[in-house]
Length: 114
Length: 115
Image (cartoon, each protein chain N blue to C red):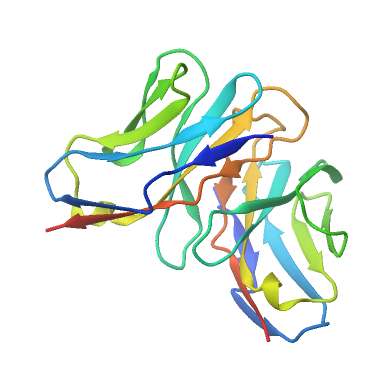
């Protein structure tokens, strides 16, 4: 069974640029959630995708967008990067769209915005 | 809106002693509750969850947690701490109803087990 993988591991961008982060979900999982974890804080929910449709969104502006593909992998896109976007971005997958199922997290992508 | 409070930023305990990491929550209706652990430069690892039934939940690596509905708490415990338990611990909640199963996390508690 392959776990959740994310790429790239680290990324450095400048203000105003755009970035795409990628996530491969665990085998058999059809739900992917994205979280932002700023330094010293708990993860904050960005959005969730279930069977290629956005299925809930946290308090993040529209410049944060995503996609889920037929193989359930996912992308997080952030436009017009700001300094405060510097954080660890975590992807999590789960089996079916049920809250009782634990989410399995990838190692994260560390984004630094200069 | 749901929320989680972890009142202690830091917990220190001697190896071999019992440990407790505290968590209280607020959610509309009934909760699903989770504990995750994060090691440096790593993602979160699932430890245990409360869904329904027995209030005492047992999880990975000898950890357990007790759900207390009246106190809206879900404290993490371990009878005998190991140095390797030193890590950042997060409590999380999601409601049992609603479409999006977003996890709401606490701010985390840094556990240090001293040899």
